[in-house]
Length: 228
Length: 297
Image (cartoon, rainbow over the protein chains, first blue to last red):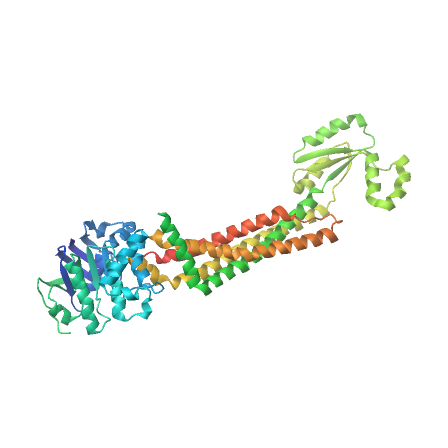
């Protein structure tokens, strides 16, 4: 499903973010990525949806090697990976419905299919009744649910989330986690970078800890392992 | 690309124009102002050119023939003149015809010369037209060398001055028009850039969701074209109404004088088409160059 072999990433300014990462993530797994700030978590995540290109090594997702891919193939790969961000990244001038539909318009889906699928995922994230609202009319948790809906609307095999609960209050964070659990139960691989100790320790899943650009711990039913 | 995707791009383009109302207005105004100037200058330039070539076409060389020459050999001389380079046409004018022409051109006062008909002081002449009016002086010099030629007249001095004036007018006009077009491009691309910078985040998000560059570019392409063409509307109206009015005035009041303006058709339809074209091209160019920067994410 996801395979990284000897991945190194050095930024042009000399920062060595990843120093030889080897990891294999099975289809249908739920993986937390933890570690202190600046340890390379974000770079690790960004390499998975090809926002960053590794300096060395190979990253194979859904059978495609992201490290060797041409620029113009990037959109095709991203359509098979749902990405969720801490700051939601919703299009401010589009309604909830339009934001979710956008991911399907991009792949030139028929209007009928778009309507069906959008309503289906909005139902899953319980936002059907707010479909006509704009992002700035929603709470943080609701906005994050829209972005989750957008990321899964074309049924990608992998969902990657970079601190999805980072901007949310604890109660809302739990609601979001329920949705991730639901997505995972339906067979989607979930990779989530997080700082939320409570969540990692309560909903126990595989934990990968990154420090200094290396994987220092990889446990099947791990805990958060940091004090912050 | 599917038809419904194209439709979607059009809908997106017009939606975004509506949602960015003030920016659209600013872009259209920028196009309008510059195209207005361009069209006025172009109309002036084309007319200067037209008038200049009317005057230039009237430039001719008169080669007067020695009185000692016999009319039988005139045909041969004419052929010799025609063989000179840069000569378009040679006409023979007998001294009688020359006098008639002179009398006619002087109107009432000319009648006084009628008495000269029996004792014509003029000479037979060849009238030479050059291929390019600018060659007049050079050809005149050549003609002067022939033995059968008594005297050459071509408005020495005046002709050179005339050409200098028309050349300067043309060059200044071209420079002005080009300068204006470049200013327009700069102005418009800047305005459009502003609208796009505010949408930078949107472009970034679209890319993250897996939109191809082409998919993102299309609405901008349509929007740029529409803004450019919309900006051409007012200049076309102004130049059509304005030129018609000026044309009427000039033809009524100055109709008797030798100058004449370019006719309204085809000048105005051609200018209108050109304005739409320039507007559309700079609109598209402006939006595409601006959007390109943000596509490298």
